[in-house]
Amino acid sequence: MKREDEEHKRDRTEDGAQSATADEAAAGEAQREAPEGAAQPEAGAAVAEEPAVDAAEPKPDADEGAGAPDAAAEVARLSDEVERLRQQLLRARADFDNFRRRTRQEQEELQWFANKQLLAELLPVVDNFERALAAAGAEASELRTGVEMVHRQLLGILEKFGVTPVPSVGEKFDPAVHEAVMQEPAGDGAEPGVVVQELQRGYMLRDKVLRPAMVKVTV
Image (cartoon, rainbow, N blue to C red):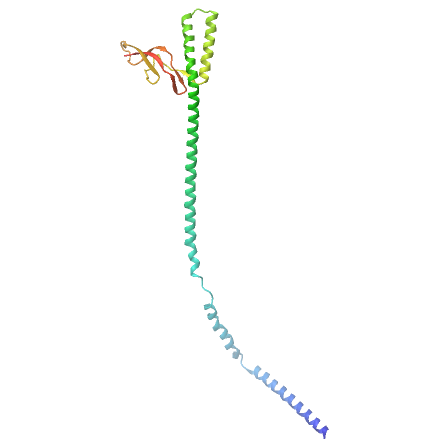
């Protein structure tokens, strides 16, 4: 009896397996017999979904273009700053040049005043040498030769320090460098106001009058 029950169970198991196999085979056959266009709705659905994807793409931020005016304003500000600094540098350079020029002029004036007194004291010595030479006449002698040599050396020293004689005889009277101590009437065709005689030589110290020349002028 037990053996018959086991055989009966085995027969039912085999029948179930064969039924499942038959169902799978039927399903496969139905899938093969289905038309190829049946799968197209899925592809179409995918295509239909693409515009939605495009619509979801991020748009350019409207604030991105706002940075351009700010950059232009910054460039303009920096350009103005550079120009301001350049002008400031030019003014500083001009001030320095003026300062250097004033300093040089002050040094020259200080040197001029320092030398003026000493050189002015030497001028009477030169005058005495010239008077001695004029009194000696044209006679050649050892004394005259010695005096002339000392006179030339003294004039050379004065010239070395910028002392030069003031042109007088035949020149137009110039009150800046001439001192009229005598006058005489102008002759026929002579021009008045002309120096006709130098009584004492005048000297310039560079471009300044060290001593005016004492002269006789026509009137």
